[in-house]
Length: 228
Image (cartoon, rainbow, N blue to C red; front, side):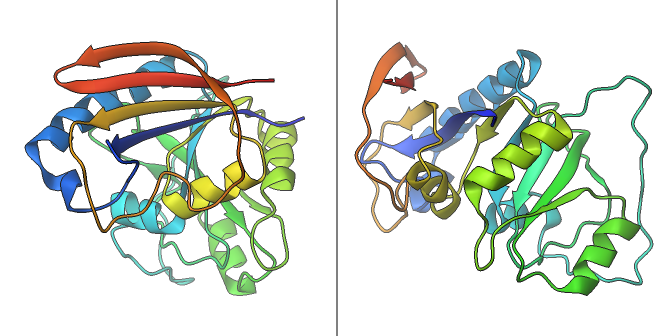
């Protein structure tokens, strides 16, 4: 068994998820819609979100290096509290977390419990660092993370049933290639962009059906479900 996966992203009209367009007024509006949807998904049954190392670093660790001698800032879960996980696909173990949770101004990301997903290439000292910081982890795959196996472990060990896939392009591509993307939620910025990365860096042909479509503040908000 594995979690249900929804890929949730902001995208240009021509399918890019990175590039200069992300710093425009139009993209700022799209991002506001995107974060609002994320908060709704969190309230309505999703158990966490997953990003690659680069996205996690840019959004949360801000380039901090890990240090086995650092003093962790720990927070215990309240009794019967169900965690919302920030799942980091970090194959070699590079992310420097100062806490075992994320503190963020946006309630959609605040108090997320960090879950590291590693490959067998990880430095053993990094594993000790995670243990010291009480950050749970999964090891799956020799050279890169085995997507299918890691999802099975999330399901069995952490009770993750529904997961938001929130980029970047490479991690999205690994999930898509593994044929585990069940749904796609997009906020499309009314701009054509160049020089960035696509929604999925790799994958094979797959059929989806449109299940939701609306216009909001000049952006297109749509949802697709995979055809069985």
